[in-house]
Image 1 (cartoon, rainbow, N blue to C red):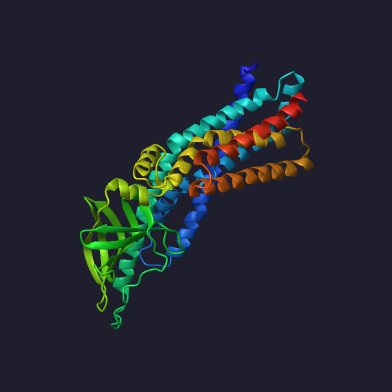
Image 2: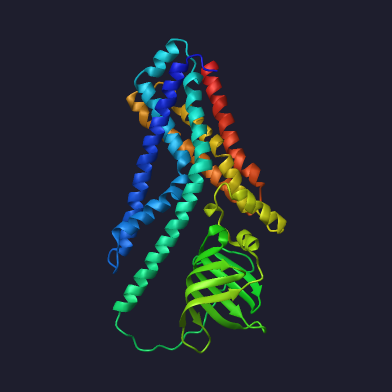
Length: 390
């Protein structure tokens, strides 16, 4: 395939080095911005620990930067090709009879290898770090609230509020401005609705959880609020909870157990957030959902998107090549970069739209995940073949 292995290896190393540098720069920049935002909101409050908040930022940035990896590959490819053009390396290579594919395919091969690494290793690590960051951030918030409660002067007793229930609670998880997931369930003590802002551990651990427990006649009996809730042996265990009943003041309790008829698999397929599930755990979760006759489109979309990631990275290299392989003078450099960024952004938007259609079940998740990368690759190869081979 490669007539000049030395030249191909040289361009592969250059692209890999450029991609690593851009990744580090983006990682540091995003971590710095995220940490500044956390510090800005928490620095004026009592109990601020700069090191712990830094750990929160560093732990959740990998999950965020995972969505920006296609742009990292795009910028790395543009930078590598532009630098080779500016240093006349591509001109000399072409003058000696070397085809553009001899330095384009090595970069594409490196991009595919990066995609495989991102799917099989980086994704499991980033999902695990995201869960740890959520737990740490929740713990810091609870500690801060305790410190503020201790330092606050005693307030006059206020009328006991009635336990209220959001209007948008349904029988299946829903998204709203205040809540991420809701689920209706039954148990030994009757029916209830449980909600949380975030789910971890494949839906078996909830953060900022609330539950509305009903009587046999359908009226609201009491409300449970807790910083965390864990599914254990057929019960939801709310820790550091507050129980509110009509006509009484909220009563703090160290632990409250709420029985449910659901098993661990049923809880996972209802509450697990696809973006917090490792690539290696998604097939099992998809199988559980199918056996339970519950739509698994969101999990299948996440799984197929991760599988298609190497091809998407290859498409980004080819897109960069279509706009940056031609020799450009200084006045054309800005136009080359803007064109590449614009084309890459359009591809990213199309990919995200396809993800949304796949998650909602409008389009098959496999088609939604693979079509943008395949079309972008074919179009880019067509343009490159036309330019290089006439």
